[in-house]
Length: 218
Image (cartoon, rainbow, N blue to C red; front, side, top):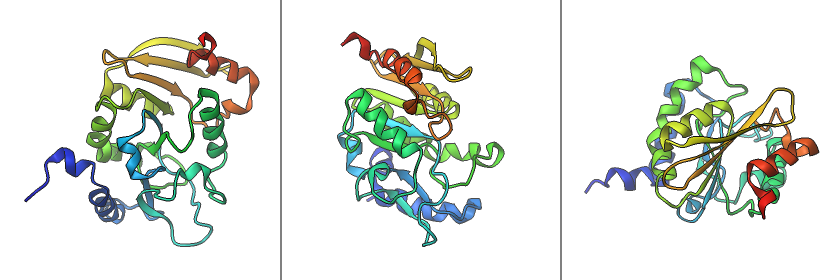
Protein backbone atom coordinates (compact mmCIF):
# COMPACT_ATOMS: atom_id res chain seq x y z
CA UNK A 1 0.00 0.00 0.00
CA UNK A 2 1.43 3.39 -0.97
CA UNK A 3 1.96 5.97 1.73
CA UNK A 4 -0.05 9.23 1.54
CA UNK A 5 1.93 12.18 0.18
CA UNK A 6 2.24 13.88 3.60
CA UNK A 7 3.67 10.76 5.27
CA UNK A 8 6.01 10.05 2.36
CA UNK A 9 7.32 13.61 2.41
CA UNK A 10 8.18 13.28 6.10
CA UNK A 11 9.89 9.91 5.67
CA UNK A 12 13.69 9.98 6.09
CA UNK A 13 14.36 6.93 3.93
CA UNK A 14 12.29 8.43 1.13
CA UNK A 15 14.51 11.52 1.12
CA UNK A 16 17.71 9.51 1.48
CA UNK A 17 16.85 7.53 -1.64
CA UNK A 18 15.52 10.52 -3.56
CA UNK A 19 18.53 12.75 -2.95
CA UNK A 20 20.92 9.89 -3.70
CA UNK A 21 19.29 9.44 -7.10
CA UNK A 22 19.03 13.14 -7.89
CA UNK A 23 22.61 14.06 -7.01
CA UNK A 24 24.21 12.48 -10.06
CA UNK A 25 21.24 13.22 -12.31
CA UNK A 26 21.51 16.94 -11.57
CA UNK A 27 25.29 17.07 -11.91
CA UNK A 28 26.24 17.47 -8.26
CA UNK A 29 29.10 15.40 -6.84
CA UNK A 30 29.98 16.69 -3.36
CA UNK A 31 27.23 15.05 -1.34
CA UNK A 32 24.06 16.39 0.28
CA UNK A 33 22.43 17.10 3.61
CA UNK A 34 18.84 18.25 4.07
CA UNK A 35 18.73 18.42 7.87
CA UNK A 36 21.72 19.41 9.99
CA UNK A 37 19.74 17.91 12.88
CA UNK A 38 18.31 14.45 13.65
CA UNK A 39 15.14 13.65 11.71
CA UNK A 40 13.12 13.36 14.94
CA UNK A 41 13.28 17.15 15.41
CA UNK A 42 10.67 17.49 12.68
CA UNK A 43 8.23 16.35 15.34
CA UNK A 44 9.53 18.37 18.29
CA UNK A 45 11.22 21.63 17.18
CA UNK A 46 9.45 24.98 17.42
CA UNK A 47 12.26 26.96 15.76
CA UNK A 48 13.69 26.40 12.27
CA UNK A 49 17.12 27.73 11.26
CA UNK A 50 17.16 27.47 7.48
CA UNK A 51 20.29 28.28 5.49
CA UNK A 52 20.79 28.18 1.74
CA UNK A 53 22.70 24.94 1.09
CA UNK A 54 25.67 22.97 2.46
CA UNK A 55 28.87 24.78 1.56
CA UNK A 56 32.40 23.42 1.22
CA UNK A 57 33.25 19.85 2.11
CA UNK A 58 33.63 19.03 5.83
CA UNK A 59 34.74 15.43 5.15
CA UNK A 60 38.50 16.25 5.28
CA UNK A 61 39.31 14.29 2.15
CA UNK A 62 37.02 11.37 3.00
CA UNK A 63 33.95 10.39 1.02
CA UNK A 64 31.52 13.37 1.07
CA UNK A 65 28.55 13.05 3.39
CA UNK A 66 25.38 11.95 1.68
CA UNK A 67 22.73 12.04 4.39
CA UNK A 68 19.14 13.22 4.60
CA UNK A 69 19.73 14.19 8.24
CA UNK A 70 22.53 14.18 10.80
CA UNK A 71 21.53 11.56 13.34
CA UNK A 72 24.61 12.30 15.51
CA UNK A 73 23.11 15.60 16.65
CA UNK A 74 23.31 19.16 15.35
CA UNK A 75 26.05 19.31 12.70
CA UNK A 76 27.04 22.79 13.81
CA UNK A 77 27.99 21.56 17.29
CA UNK A 78 29.83 18.33 16.39
CA UNK A 79 33.57 18.73 17.19
CA UNK A 80 35.82 18.71 14.15
CA UNK A 81 33.11 19.44 11.60
CA UNK A 82 34.29 22.16 9.24
CA UNK A 83 31.18 24.35 9.17
CA UNK A 84 32.85 27.50 10.50
CA UNK A 85 32.18 30.39 10.55
CA UNK A 86 28.46 29.68 10.28
CA UNK A 87 28.70 27.07 13.06
CA UNK A 88 30.01 29.66 15.49
CA UNK A 89 27.36 32.14 14.38
CA UNK A 90 24.62 29.53 14.81
CA UNK A 91 25.67 28.68 18.36
CA UNK A 92 25.97 32.36 19.32
CA UNK A 93 22.54 33.09 17.85
CA UNK A 94 20.96 30.22 19.79
CA UNK A 95 22.53 31.55 22.97
CA UNK A 96 21.19 35.03 22.22
CA UNK A 97 17.60 33.89 21.71
CA UNK A 98 17.70 31.39 24.59
CA UNK A 99 17.45 28.21 22.52
CA UNK A 100 19.42 25.00 22.95
CA UNK A 101 21.30 24.46 19.64
CA UNK A 102 20.33 20.79 19.78
CA UNK A 103 16.61 21.60 19.98
CA UNK A 104 16.47 23.93 16.97
CA UNK A 105 15.74 22.31 13.60
CA UNK A 106 18.79 23.30 11.54
CA UNK A 107 18.49 22.63 7.82
CA UNK A 108 19.09 23.75 4.24
CA UNK A 109 16.74 24.96 1.54
CA UNK A 110 18.67 23.28 -1.29
CA UNK A 111 20.38 20.13 0.02
CA UNK A 112 23.21 19.60 -2.46
CA UNK A 113 26.68 20.70 -1.37
CA UNK A 114 28.51 23.28 -3.51
CA UNK A 115 31.63 25.40 -3.11
CA UNK A 116 29.56 28.47 -3.97
CA UNK A 117 26.00 29.33 -4.98
CA UNK A 118 25.44 29.41 -8.72
CA UNK A 119 22.04 31.02 -9.23
CA UNK A 120 21.53 29.59 -12.73
CA UNK A 121 22.49 26.06 -11.67
CA UNK A 122 21.18 25.91 -8.11
CA UNK A 123 18.10 28.09 -7.71
CA UNK A 124 15.91 25.88 -9.90
CA UNK A 125 16.63 22.97 -7.56
CA UNK A 126 14.98 24.70 -4.62
CA UNK A 127 11.82 23.17 -6.06
CA UNK A 128 13.01 19.72 -4.99
CA UNK A 129 12.24 20.41 -1.33
CA UNK A 130 9.50 23.04 -1.71
CA UNK A 131 6.61 20.74 -0.79
CA UNK A 132 8.64 19.34 2.11
CA UNK A 133 9.31 22.76 3.59
CA UNK A 134 5.73 23.86 2.99
CA UNK A 135 4.54 21.00 5.19
CA UNK A 136 7.13 21.77 7.87
CA UNK A 137 6.51 25.50 8.22
CA UNK A 138 2.72 25.23 7.97
CA UNK A 139 2.15 22.34 10.36
CA UNK A 140 1.45 24.62 13.34
CA UNK A 141 4.41 23.33 15.35
CA UNK A 142 7.07 25.66 13.98
CA UNK A 143 6.63 29.12 15.52
CA UNK A 144 9.85 30.81 14.41
CA UNK A 145 11.78 30.56 11.14
CA UNK A 146 15.25 32.09 10.91
CA UNK A 147 15.79 32.54 7.18
CA UNK A 148 19.48 32.93 6.35
CA UNK A 149 20.07 34.69 2.99
CA UNK A 150 17.79 36.64 0.65
CA UNK A 151 16.98 33.51 -1.35
CA UNK A 152 15.77 31.62 1.71
CA UNK A 153 13.81 34.66 2.88
CA UNK A 154 11.92 34.94 -0.43
CA UNK A 155 11.09 31.23 -0.50
CA UNK A 156 9.82 31.14 3.08
CA UNK A 157 7.64 34.20 2.50
CA UNK A 158 6.06 32.44 -0.48
CA UNK A 159 5.34 29.36 1.63
CA UNK A 160 4.00 31.14 4.72
CA UNK A 161 2.40 34.34 3.44
CA UNK A 162 4.11 36.25 6.24
CA UNK A 163 4.02 40.04 5.99
CA UNK A 164 6.69 42.57 6.89
CA UNK A 165 6.49 43.83 10.45
CA UNK A 166 9.89 45.46 10.95
CA UNK A 167 13.02 46.29 8.97
CA UNK A 168 16.09 47.69 10.71
CA UNK A 169 19.79 48.18 9.90
CA UNK A 170 22.10 45.34 10.85
CA UNK A 171 24.81 47.90 11.59
CA UNK A 172 26.95 46.15 9.00
CA UNK A 173 27.46 48.25 5.86
CA UNK A 174 24.02 48.66 4.21
CA UNK A 175 22.62 45.29 5.33
CA UNK A 176 19.05 45.23 6.66
CA UNK A 177 17.43 42.58 8.82
CA UNK A 178 13.68 41.96 8.82
CA UNK A 179 10.86 40.44 10.85
CA UNK A 180 7.64 39.09 9.33
CA UNK A 181 4.50 37.47 10.77
CA UNK A 182 1.62 35.58 9.21
CA UNK A 183 -1.99 35.14 10.28
CA UNK A 184 -1.19 31.88 12.08
CA UNK A 185 1.30 33.56 14.41
CA UNK A 186 4.43 32.25 12.72
CA UNK A 187 7.35 34.71 12.82
CA UNK A 188 10.05 34.85 10.16
CA UNK A 189 13.39 36.50 10.93
CA UNK A 190 15.38 37.33 7.80
CA UNK A 191 19.16 37.54 8.19
CA UNK A 192 21.99 37.79 5.69
CA UNK A 193 24.14 34.72 5.13
CA UNK A 194 26.06 34.36 8.37
CA UNK A 195 29.10 32.81 6.70
CA UNK A 196 29.81 36.18 5.15
CA UNK A 197 28.09 38.59 7.54
CA UNK A 198 29.20 37.51 11.00
CA UNK A 199 26.62 39.56 12.88
CA UNK A 200 27.04 37.57 16.09
CA UNK A 201 30.70 38.60 16.27
CA UNK A 202 29.94 42.33 16.15
CA UNK A 203 28.44 44.01 19.21
CA UNK A 204 26.78 46.75 17.18
CA UNK A 205 24.96 44.08 15.15
CA UNK A 206 24.06 42.01 18.20
CA UNK A 207 22.20 45.02 19.60
CA UNK A 208 20.13 45.14 16.41
CA UNK A 209 19.40 41.40 16.64
CA UNK A 210 18.13 41.96 20.17
CA UNK A 211 15.67 44.47 18.73
CA UNK A 212 14.69 42.22 15.83
CA UNK A 213 13.96 39.23 18.08
CA UNK A 214 12.21 41.56 20.55
CA UNK A 215 14.50 40.41 23.34
CA UNK A 216 14.73 43.93 24.75
CA UNK A 217 11.10 43.66 25.85
CA UNK A 218 11.74 40.79 28.28
